[in-house]
Amino acid sequence: MISEVREKGVDVLVALALVREAADPEIGLVILASHDTDLAPALDEALDIGTAKVESCWWNPDRRWTGPPQPSGGRRVWNTRLRCGAFERAQDRTDYT
Figure 1 (cartoon, helix red, strand yellow):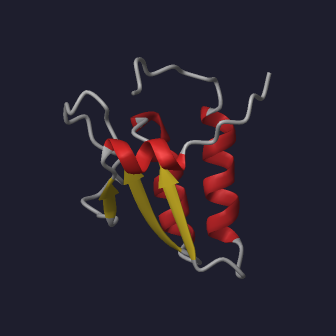
Figure 2: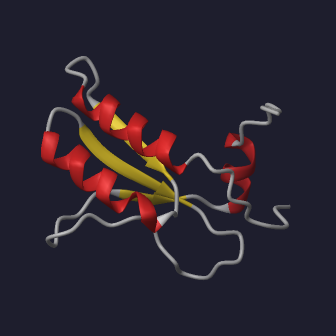
């Protein structure tokens, strides 16, 4: 079970990767797996580039609706909400310290 949500300080790296991958002509789909609304400007940029399709994936162990980052201007992206079991199986358990 997930007991807490921790900020790991990788927001900028995630934003850069999202935009970089969306701009790559060899990439057809980029999936943003986050509920961090601070990534909305990067999501806007990835959609503006228009090379790759962008979707999001979201989870919340507390079952409160905070939602995934949303693009501006009324644009929408497909979002898949993961259940806790699927999220747990998808976790990267690598210790990066």
